[in-house]
Amino acid sequence: MNRFAARLWLPVGFLGLALPALAAAQAPPGAAPANCAAARGPASWKSVEPLADGRVTFRLCAPDATTVYLASTDLPGIVPMDATRPGLAMARGVDGVWSVTTARVEPDNYRYTFLVNGAVVPDPQASTFSQERTGTRSTFEMPGAAGSFQSWDRAVPHGLVSVFEYWSASLNAKRRAHVYLPPGYTRGSKRYPVLYLVNGAGDSDDNWTSTGHAHYILDNLIAAGKARPMIIVMPAGHTPDRAGGNMLANADFGNDLLQDLIPAIDAGFRTEARARSRAMAGLSMGGAHTIQFGLPHADTFHYVGIFSMGLGFGGNADDIRRYEQQHAAALARAAKQMKLVYYAIGKEDFLYASVAPTRAMLDRAGIRHVYETGGGHTWINWRRYLEDFAPRLFR
Image: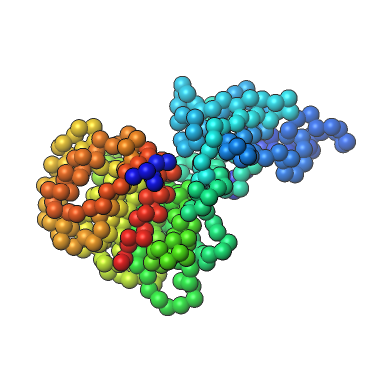
């Protein structure tokens, strides 16, 4: 559908990005700044500056750098970072400030980093960041009406997001999840349904809020009366590496989710602890987790959402045959008990070839499903999938 088209400071001297305080201390008293690093306090220039025509200018003070690139997988005209095409080249100014201006950027939330002399560097002037599985990226929001559905709105009540740590007996490890509690949760005794919302590969439990703005999306939907107030639990989609592990069919994640996290959430929060009040959804790798551990578990979830993932991609029909054989009885139960199976993937997504075999599998199992399409394998679409999916839950 067309509606879908669409805290950190670096160590002193790291990669040649001198901290202003150090540079100022080394300059003689009263001396004029020799470069951008010599000024005291906050920078006089903006590291991210949205322009009136919809473009965005990025700046970085790196007077000793020899090459600087702007890297982002979401911004237009910028390729993903790799050794041969690292990003959008930035130009050095006489004061040591590197800058570049992008093509037009649609209103939304975006992640970015700088590549300085070959090393990935978050923006030292940023105030918002997104934690990945390893490393950190800076974020910025491009303002505009088209992105307001995922923006903080002072006119609506807001929930809160907490970091929840728990012991996973199945993994023999401490684990972490982010938990969204809807407006009003802290002022009453009401119990709430729960959506388990999983991140993609390379990301962490932080990303559905820092990048996906799931909490703002739900705040706005709840205020508009479009979605039921609900708890959202955002688990860590990755588990500790081990020999023979499978990232997409990750039994370690499934065991942790079903045996450890869900009981811990039900014990620690006011949940409606029953299948008809639980949902599971995820993007990319999280969509694979939902296929593997949500769809076959109608005894635990009555709503599932699969974003940008499918079975049998790359023409591997054996994946689907194994899945159907392994879960034959569970899929039969899902056909009878699931209240919603939601499947969304864009025609520009590199996994789009998995759509036909996955939908055919659902049809063979007699599982009715809602299908939405549009866009590529990006957060720009995943936020919109969540905005469309959440109002369908717990009705």
